[in-house]
Length: 115
Image (cartoon, rainbow, N blue to C red; front, side):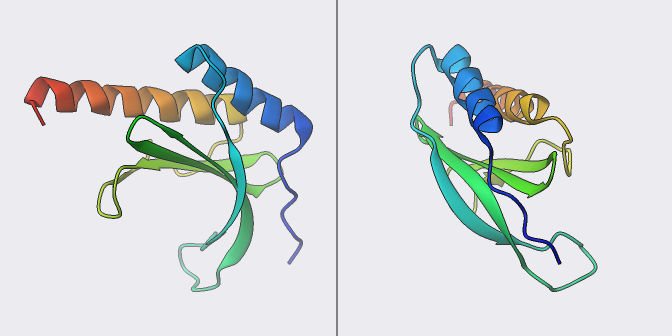
């Protein structure tokens, strides 16, 4: 199995620029490694590069699962993990923007419920 390449400079710029537009300031993004089951019918874990950041009490992860393929989620605690409803994206901008929108919608719902 081929190794999944790290995020390149263009991909890093997309994430940094999208976050700066969303929050109005630079957000520290960390390059991390993770392991995922890329095939839901297999127990094999594949090492994947990922980007991690925090905003407020939310934590975000975007994982590169192949050339031009991405997955994302945000979480608050181990038992409060959320996705976007899309298994995998082929456009990094769409992946990050959707992740941020779903999290913002989740925050608005929590605030409305008084949670």
